[in-house]
Amino acid sequence: MKVSDIMTKDMVIADTNDTVYDVARLMKHHNIGAVPIVTEQNKVLGMVTDRDIVMNIAKYNLDTAKTLASTIMSDNVYSVKPDADVESALQLMKKQKIRRLPVIENEFLLGMVSLGDIAVSNGYKEEISEALTEISKPAKVENI
Image (cartoon, rainbow, N blue to C red; front, top):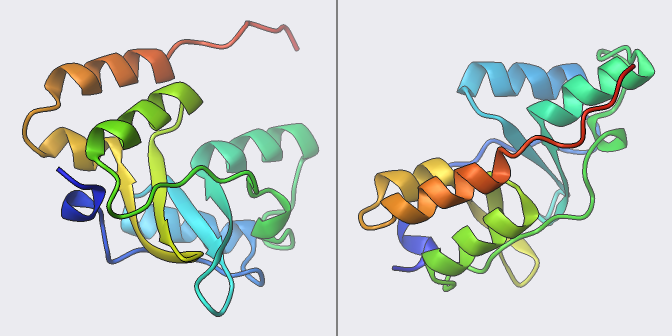
């Protein structure tokens, strides 16, 4: 099965002018945990996850209404092509400990694929369990 068969095509996106607050509201409204930051031409510049928001607020005491989401985005974006097989997307998620991947072709965002998308498709029950186990392993505990 190819990523294009299961990816979400109706994506929620943000641009470089959106604030952290704007992106958090998009996440809440659409019940999602990641939003790609894109150019006007729909090229991915980075990703903002719900975790990025929480960690940066805690670390820097950010004013979410005044801070641009692009300042906290992860700009090292892992992605897959639409013709990639689902197994390779799942292995990349597992290796990089991420739950979502943008689907990009010729630098343009076409969709998103998540562990949830893979979980509801047929035949990946064991692989999903392994990926979630790997992704969910806690980091080294650090006292603050």
